Image (tube, rainbow, N blue to C red):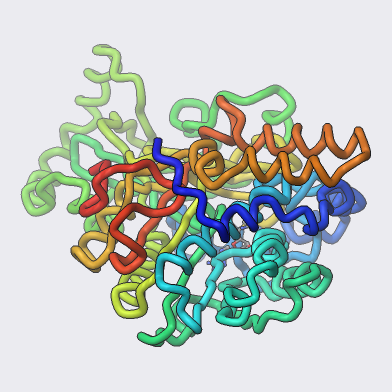
Length: 492
Ligand code: SAH
């Protein structure tokens, strides 16, 4: 891998020991809210009731609809609740919450891109899904040593949750060097003006994995959509045979036996998503539609044959029939349109975008997962209380970028968090921080937490780094990425 040449500004940033080391205190500040409150339980009850009623009235719903409500219902959605969901006391911990070094090195990346853009006098820094605001606060704090960079900055944050906007505001206000910057909040990219004279840097960390997906399943009758139905309608019988989440601990099974009211079930007929995205995934939709009627008659017979021939995966459809599963794919229209909008504006404004998330260049088949207080739970368990996330389909996003903006933008091959942070100067930064620290425990904690960010196997390899850059960011590659042909990127 090519490590970017150490320019003077980077050296200054990486070695600045004037930056406060605040990880020890802030990382513990969430612990007080570890226990779910009684209002949290009523949240799930309310949301579960609403979703169940909707299914009773309108029939099975898509996974995308379910996720949208579970995560972003204005009152009871997971991200909209007042309880703490991030950090040690919440459901999950993210890289910026693990170590301040993460945000500091993203700060290095931002300054490197600004440099490569020729140090423009105006620069828009956007972050999508800032969570508690820790990452943006660390970026702003650590880059304050560059007055020119800060003077150019305006910051736009895309955040759907009013509650989290408040938390972000507090985090930023409490961070030295961050509070002086002009910051605005938005519900989507669309409401942020795109100015050809103001280049843009965008960061999104664990944002795309929170956007809702459709799950499509290829059957002998063509692509179908996996839907969500009430257990009382499926009589719970479908679950054991067809539920991809059937492997669980005893404790989890107990939890569900009491509380889970939803099941997965395959749509008996094509749905708008299976028609639209199934076509994108391949398969002749018209021919499939023609063949569907005959195929349906044969389906149960085929299923029997499949069973005897050892086709492993089967699912139950809405009519109660068992259907063999030939292939499956998860589709995230929200991530696709986010990248499309980003690329459209970047083609005009110039700049670069950095997205860090779980994911691969392959389309995930079924990655939907539920997390409650650091433990995996069934994704249909207690909507609103459980964090739902998916793997990001970077290959498709790369394709969307190419289709949207052609040759004006570049997508280097996917990198890992480990390689990216190493290339941005992780070691130099840790050494500089250690120089300014006397406390033995604090020194140990700094090294331990930074080690966790780059652990392999672990966060260092599970998290991937995806970049899109405008050609004007430079012909000699993108800061933090391997030296590779950039035009048209690697991967697919
Ligand atoms: N980047 C943070 C938080 C990740 S959690 C970190 O790494 O710690 C996902 C974030 O995206 C939350 O802030 C959540 O409220 C926000 N979010 C989720 N869905 C969104 C949507 N559709 N539009 C805007 N923000 C969304």
